[in-house]
Image (cartoon, rainbow, N blue to C red; front, side, top):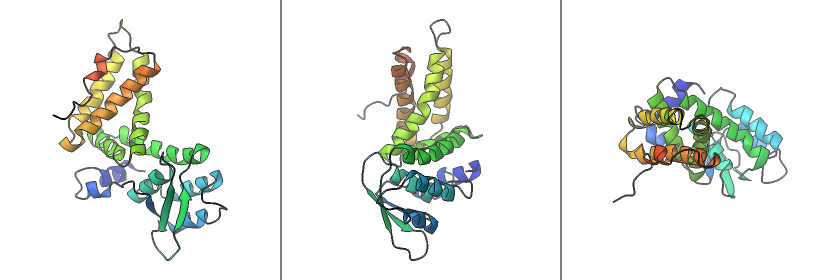
Length: 225
């Protein structure tokens, strides 16, 4: 996806930004080509070949749009259920498929991680961060995916942080994240804080509690009064 397109439908400067973020509801729309690929299978789930063919259709224009993100989020949800997929156009019958796992799921996880990377590395760092935070609001699965996306970045900084360098790599990364966070609208502040906190908490756990907790505990949202 080009960065301009990514931010155009997700950032608050567009009037319909909130409405354009998809929601997790067990239903999705898809290009008729996608439904045709689903119809070539022999069951209620996709095989790996079908997953790759659907991914190719989705990325044929080089970008992800909100409808495609919703489709992906639904079929790789962490809870097992049937997803009702209807055509974007035409009169094809809806298809029902189950949520994916393993290599089939990873095909679509890779698409989203590439998208998250574009947002994270956006030239306008604040707008990119906001779009990433909004992605985490789509569903519990999306929240976990965005947290997992940030964790390796925190872990790399934490691994290089020692008493001798006063934990500078970790401090600098978290300060950079917080600078992006600080410009967000109020309604995104708590979610943004949770993402930062979960990234560093997970990294610290993976490194056997290498970081002093106070280095990142301060970003954790306070309980509501």
